Length: 275
Image (cartoon, helix red, strand yellow):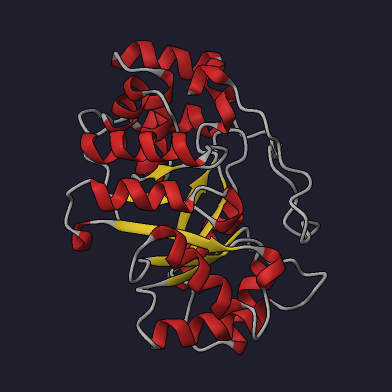
């Protein structure tokens, strides 16, 4: 799984097709979508038209909350595959745990079967907390490959990241730029000036040096290219320490323990400066 990928949350089908096409042309090889996003079809069109061999691509999609439980997972997975127009996905995630329904362990067993059948190359989760991960470790057979979580300079989740490291679970950051809020912080703008980079590039570089998998989104070709140009510089230990001081404990998205079937609590707006 490439450590730096491309996300398409809040991007419509047509825009997703164009943005993914640009991203693949620039050199991205990992694309992250979800059933909830409503753009799997656009993503699939761009992937298939790119000319990039399928084995060089890493495509992730996610099961929506309403489709958790035995008897619902496989039809939902098949719908996603059909929209993507692919024979398999590289990573399939449970989008949210939805503890109020208590179906995520049952759902995980269905995921394990999809993996055993060769329909998915790897399985993981998104927005899971340590207690929920512990249940999967105890009651399941396969350790989640990934937990995709809200993670940015203002919400760094050190305890959860430590749990992941202890159990061999990769940490993947959604909203890695804090929906643009982090980009105006004086510490980040100062580091950007020091390194001759954009604030977004500094934040993405920070993620990479923390060992996080990161999936920035944009629909602007220039920013798509800029977000990939983060491998020609390195933050110093002092820079990283300064970034650690930006932790505020403030989420942008909802608390995973309260998200249900309906996609309530999600911001439908994003700072246009990061697009």
